[in-house]
Image (cartoon, rainbow, N blue to C red; front, side):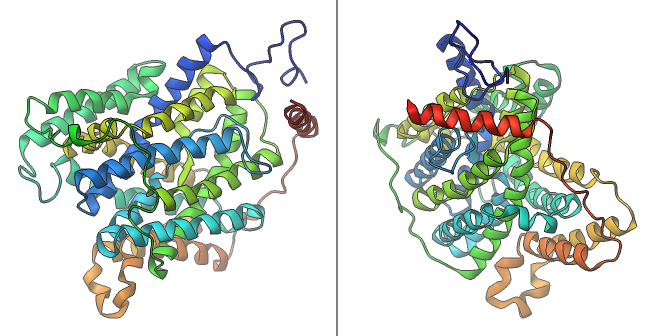
Length: 466
């Protein structure tokens, strides 16, 4: 195929080939662009976790370092791969946003060690499911996946508003200053996303947060005390927050992990379709899902949430038509390098809540929008509407009124606090038992798939020979 062979006499491959290597003058800026596009989304879970446990400056720095390190190493596992693990595609990995809704309340109530124990078990669950994900895909049609993602987004919104107000319990909470800075970040994000082009559009949240960060200095919202006390260079400490295994934390994290993996199947297809105009091969799908599960172990060790494929970076691949996995590998190396700089991590961890709130409100709202988009994928008939209605009503209703079930939930109350577990169980069960369940059309392989598979095999052999 033309997209998998070197151009005769040039030694260069087509940009649609994952093994293509653009000139360094092109590859490095593109790699940095991938980092900028996912930077804020990757750090937000770490900063929210730090706030949830009332972390000291040193603990917050460790969480930010862990988020950077795990994202970089997970991306390297995805782009370079080890044996059957890794898609060898330009997939940027970062801390999974969906986990915030369960991890932050769990960390506040049970401790971060319980969350990290849940992360480690979730990694094992994801790897096991990744080996046979096609066997459980029927449990997660768009009506189920969309409902769960919508509930995740709805659960995140109150946190976004509290951050925009300045952070619960902080001085000046709910002040005009805090809301003014948050509003500036929010409006700038929307303007850049809608009217900017190229990098400014892809990194709209990051640019808006940087502007808000600078505005927060004269507004008296920025506290950089302790930044100078950090060493210039240090490796994140493994198991710095400990690990404990609690059934409630494990069940909550694992359910979100399974939903994330099902969604990632579409993400792998999206990057090959957007960058190379072809469907993903079975090897790429399986390798990508296994890498997502396997890399979650890193989070349990260093103190980060499980990593997942970032869709905003897939948009960059489609926009630039540069399918090279080596470009994303450069971005991954940059993330690993940044993770070794504690002073930089301290500056990032010090982002004022109002600034962060203005940025994450857009991101949290997008989670809701993605859920709605999935729900509309196959249309919403009476049956589908009933599944959505019952799942959202019970999930979010119980989450909004935890005292109502405190007497019967007991120590299991944390399992219901986010509403995600309840919504997931209700949606899956109703989809299975209600009459009229749509029968998915049999998968028809693409005529090009055998040729693409052969090309992937050929590239693997070339790498082995080299």
